[in-house]
Image (cartoon, rainbow, N blue to C red):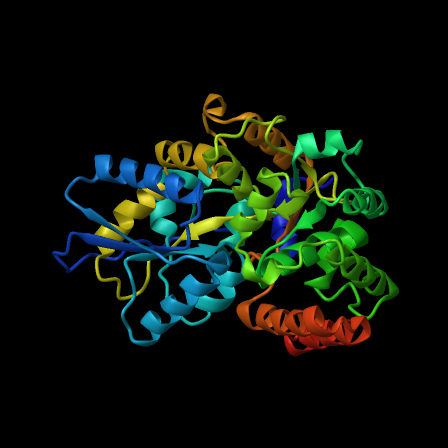
Length: 422
């Protein structure tokens, strides 16, 4: 298998070495002590994780006041809509959360809205403790533009072990096995797969595509080497359509954590969600292998579908010194070892204290060093906002009309519009 640094660099086509001179936090001219930080961490588990990070910030920088500007819902969609309005009015917060990869590079860097952080990375020694592939993912033309606080895995099949045991079901490793299990669960009156609002269906789509195409062809979709009109994609879309038939009928009305709650309650057997779900399960007092369990989503064993949450220094920050203080804590060993054990993610640093992390997270750390690494669509790694938005529009129509051929044609058109496909 290819190692993580190589895969991460290739998957987004970045060529940055992230070791140039210039950049970094600009000199502050404000006396403001308020540090307003935008995020979307409001659900159980993630809100507590943010609180733990803020606690470190408060201890390290007691002269500053952290202003939590978290906006709930939509895997960041709602927060980023509010942020866009703020930025268009030239009223940026001190910092904001974004997904490493094309979400940050193709949106905020392209618009000239955030500062380079090379000097800060050099000063804090982060180039020595963060994987080169991750540095490449947050860089362009030799400049580093954000501080990653974690690494998440998207392609996790979470399940209720009691429900599986009661129905004589083993964990499926392929979609055909899932369909067999799903038929048995459906006959027993159990929802096979819990799903929430539309972004969770995009999350499901990417895991089905990756599990059907394999990691190389999945990555090829975003580099123009895999044809969106190919028979393999046709098959993946057909599989996705069949998977949707086993989801809860009220999916569009539920948030991701409400969908995960169906698994907690035993009303559903499985949900496919990133490992922030583990923070949710732990917030409910559940124990691994008893209240919840996990495996790679069908077809993706040996594949790590990754994303990372990062924070930025905006141009014209209302408090650049306070922003720099926040970024230092977000990138620090102490900050990441406080945040990630609660969040369910693993640290972006390679020198973390493993003893602070639970069984799932230690498993995830080991997987990250051995699996083939690919990037997430839903969570910003592989496609810029315009491309992702076009896919989301096509997906919304497909969820309504179930026209597989039209959906595939729209996906191919989106790639062409993005300039990646000829």
